[in-house]
Length: 378
Image (cartoon, rainbow, N blue to C red; front, side, top):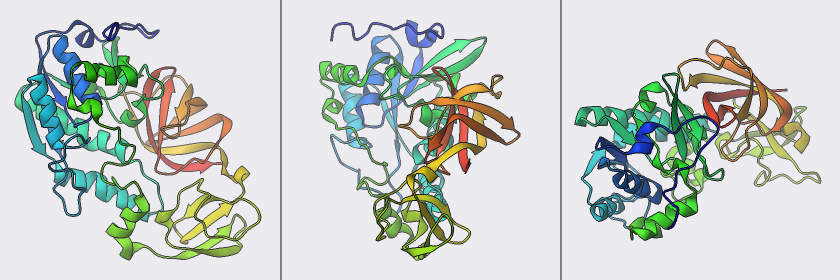
């Protein structure tokens, strides 16, 4: 595709030299079986790197999805092996099923049971994927690691900074709030300078099998797409029915278990009411589902716990932008650091602030870090 390799400029500073120059340096690419990681390996090979590929196999725990032997599917070891063969690259496999089940799948179930709506992808990137990829690279003697995430990395003042991807519709910086200097010192993100159409075109140019792989919109461990069915299967004995009440505490009906609901939900409440009602809160302590009109969903701010700052230090400025969910825009806010938490006060009230989701903090195009939403503030 003409111009596909053309580098773009941005207003932050120079692109990381490791991504721009392309040297005969060893890099270990996390190859998932999807088009993005496949093209990441392709781009690095074209730039002259000594590229090796690694697939983390996650699907050998009880009741795991059946990805074994599948071709033309993301998360498929077979597809990853085909891509590595097409590109003429060495390929390795490491079984992380136990770690993934413990740190991501079980964590997700536990959070839902506690009335919290977790973000498994952000959790996986923070505590499993990047940490173990870095450790594996060190053990195998690779100075660099690479993934197919739509983000960019730059170096400034001897620190690595993480920027949004060029494609606003595909930018994945939100999910990488948990990365730090230890990971970024080694990390390369080749696809962050491209949009999705360009990535598919590059895959087609090379006749990669992943050019025909449809992008999954579901959680990888819930391929059927309905997390409620997943919870019913994995933790039905922990589901407990309870009251549905309005914001004043008046009884309106019964719910089938708090994990089946999320803040902002309107459909599936099973209530006969003339006005539209939304889930306002999951009262875990009293096992009550609190519902109310849409205006009750708006909050002036939030408290986030377990913060991580990409450069290792909290932001010096307080007037920043914050995203409260992946598909939400980053909006103006004041961020105040309070020890092991931070407080966000929005310039304008925000809708459906959901405990368990990530509050990602930005300064323009730069991701500064973030934390897990603990509660909304009115």
